[in-house]
Structures are given as structure tokens and as C-alpha cells.
Image (cartoon, rainbow, N blue to C red; front, side, top):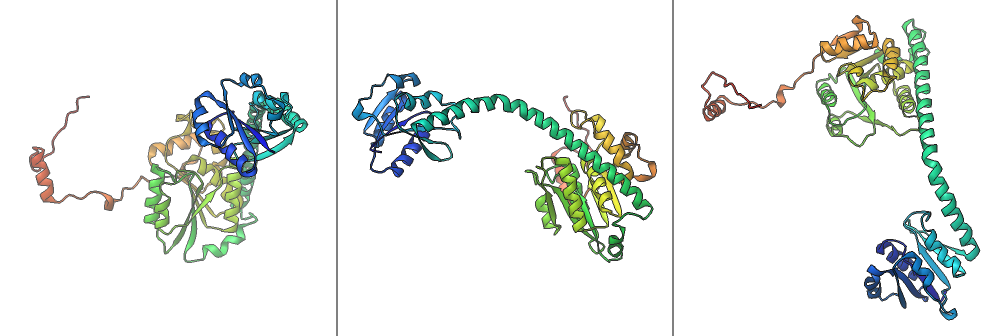
Length: 395
């Protein structure tokens, strides 16, 4: 093309990017531009165009007279989205003026050309079909999300039912994978997998770090399994303790079913003698995965009261899955008697399966104050030696 017309259909930066792409593609062509009134001076300063015309509104394009000798050989319409669905006014300009070649440049940097008839078909498909899709897709997406959640729950309870059957077989020594663990139980150092939904900042995660610090490594070889979330606050501390971390992909179409299947696959490929799950979701999912994989000991660790105290957080099916998976665990650990009793009533867990182990505090991390420093601080606070000072707050 000898003469190319570039329209400004959006931001100046995108128009300039389209112009540069056109100049590189056709270095010998003359460029003319239709731009907004606010950007006229900036476009003229570029010195890249032989003609710069103001565009006060999209309707002003139709008022521009073009003599036969000045009719462009190519019209470029830059889109700031991928398909240019919302650009019918600008798309119609080369159609009305019978410009035989039309090109589009989108935000991805794709440059594509059409002839006049092809441009008409592309515009009708993009604007008509695209707007129809915009109207239909939200409703279709809501239906798909509902179907996906429903299918995920069906798959979850299907796996839980299978796990319950295999758990019953394990109790009488008929689980098909029981023989795989006989050699493992005789080894000096045995593998234990710690499954927790996240290594982000939280009390359960801090207790997990304390657990790993004081674990007898001569007897146990730990591994942490968690979901690949953006918050990995404690991941570095786990790695500093030379404990490997396996991240499960939480972005599967059926995410509950997908997480359990990934965990089953990992436990099958890397058998362990103990699977210790932390927090409600992990306790239920770990019980299902551990029962299907035939893990000899499955432990669940509760760190808070029953889910019914948090109705805004837990779904309605949580209690059903907790009751269903309760028999699959060897034992449950609660960090207080209140937590133990709440979860016993919540999931109908037998008393003999519940153990209370209070949260520990690492005294090595506590600030130790020498006697001289303590005496100086008491003098500054006007507290007698050997006595404590009662502080009254104004609220």
C-alpha cells in the first residue's frame, strides 16, 4: 500500500503502538491518522504522519471527504481487546468508504489483514456473535459452575464410600494394599506424611513447625504435603528443617476430587506408615486418601471447634463428610478438651479415638531477662522488687 490510514480507537499509547507496527511492516508507505482532539499535538510531534485529522467523535469520521486520489489503500483499526467486539463504529468506516484492504491490530500485538468483503464478515461475526456470546456466557458460566460443584460433591462422596469399604477390609486384614506396608513397618526410620491445606500464616502451621523441630528423625522421616497456594509463609522454615514439601494442584476442574486423587497417587507411589492430616478439610480428605491407599495409621488433627460455629465458612455438606470419614481415621488429636468434645458430638466420634494434646510453646524462643535487667525495669516502672504491679486500663 502507498497510503495507509490509521484510526485512533482508544488510548494514545495503543494507537502509537499500532502505527509503529504498520510503519515496520510497510516502511515505504505514507501514514495518515484520525486522532482525538486531545492527542492532535502529540501525534503531530511524532512526525510519522503525512496527514493528521481531528476526530471529535466517532460520527465525525463519516463527515470527512476523501478525494479519489487520496483514498487510502489500507485502513488500520487498532483494538484494545482481542476480538474488537465493541468497535462497530470504527469497523464500519472502511466498509462505508469502500477501502479495499483493512487491517486490525489488537492488544496482543497481532496484525491481520482482510479484503473488503472479508472485513464485513469478520465485523459481523465479531460484533454480532461476540455480543451474543457476552449475553449468553454469564448464564452458561453460572450453570457450568453449579454442575461442576454438584459433580465434584458426587465424586467426593463416591470416593468416601469406596474408602469406607476399603477401611472395613483393612480392619480385617483384607485390604488389597496391606502387604505393601509390611516391609515399611520393619524399617528403622519410617515415613510420615503431614498433610495440611496451606503453609500460610496461621496457628496450625506454627504448631506444625514446632512438631517438625522436635520430631525424632532417627525414627521418623517426615514429608509435608500441601496445596499450591500463593501464601507460603512457613514454607522456608519447613525447608530449613530439611523436610521435603509436595505441592498439590488445587486448580483442577473438580478440585476436591482432584486433590484427593493427587494425594492417593502420591501415597501409592511413595508409601508411608503414618498419614497425619491437619484441619477439617485435610482431616476428611486425608482419611479418604489414606483408606484407599491402605495407609496403616491415619491421624486427624483438629485445631478449632466444630464447623457449625463457623456457618459462614464451612459448607452444608461438611458434617456429612465428617461423619462418613470419622471411622476411617485411627485416632484424632485435639488441642483442647473443648475442641475434643465439640468434634466428638459433631461427627459422632467414639471417645476412645480422641486424644487431647495441648499446643506447646518453645521456651527457647521466649525472651529471657537477666535479674539485673529485671530490677532496672521494675525501678523504671516504679514496681517494688518481688512484687507485681496491677495495671488498670481505661476501657
